[in-house]
Length: 399
Image (tube, rainbow, N blue to C red; front, top):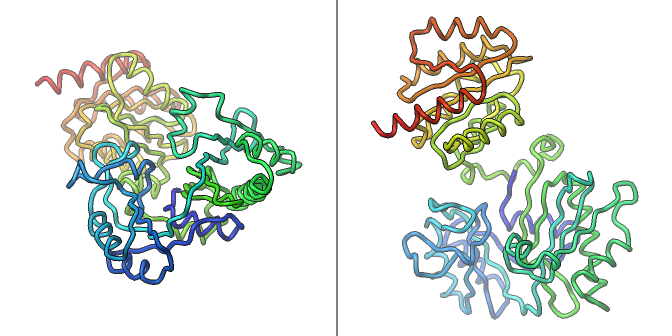
């Protein structure tokens, strides 16, 4: 689960991480009142959406204008910036061309930045440890830094038994080329970030940029996401969820215990098991097609849940063909078949449907589909299924 920048900063403050003062606003007037209550010579008005690159982005109603982070010298400037952002669609590198509507703003103090750095806390699955990544190249896309200057990214894995140590702090401060009081401030910040990450079951805590102001190191921006499986332990974190930022289909899938991620292709996929889903998408690409989604119905799905999954796929107007690839173990093939048949009839299926079933009750599943009267294309194996769905989709689009 993702949260907004202002929410992340409030959490970081509770863990002793220094951040600039700021006030969230849900409309233009709240932004103006926030600015009027602040004692500063420089304000920053920041669009709050679940995407990075806001400052370098653009609004669809003014593509050549300023982005979603604006410096303001007066309260009148704050009003103008808020009016230019609130309710408008902001497009960044991470939103895709469709962008996201800005429904919240964050008015913060402007600070005198000496230097910008990058810092994140993530799970290094290769080492089975939480790891810090820091770089002197703050304010930039870390992917670009990794590609052009990989030597400028310093990674320090934290021993889960020892926890964050002074030695870890020294390595990270040295990686940022900090010394003296700045290094000591950074070490405190790193230790607090680690505690925050662990105690809140975070998946990532990213600060870009991390800045120095005098001898103090603080978080100028913040991004946090959390392990959805651990939210039952954190009702206060769960309450921060902004459903307006979520794809409607991804929300519907989550509510029905389905794993769904929308992609840019035209071939919908319904699979049981994350590994099989990845393999299915790979072979569709290999055969010249483009997957429209990742959708894992899991091992214990019911016919009703499969029906919901099918509807989610078909609700995407870019889907011109569907591949159902099921290996029946706990999930029986006849249950999948019942769900597919029910959904296809309910939504009046109008795109090619290729189904590959294997495993428990496979013959019963195939018999159900054959007797359904629906134009279902049966496949013998995964390669056969991918070949058929790519060909059928291409024919459907050409028709």
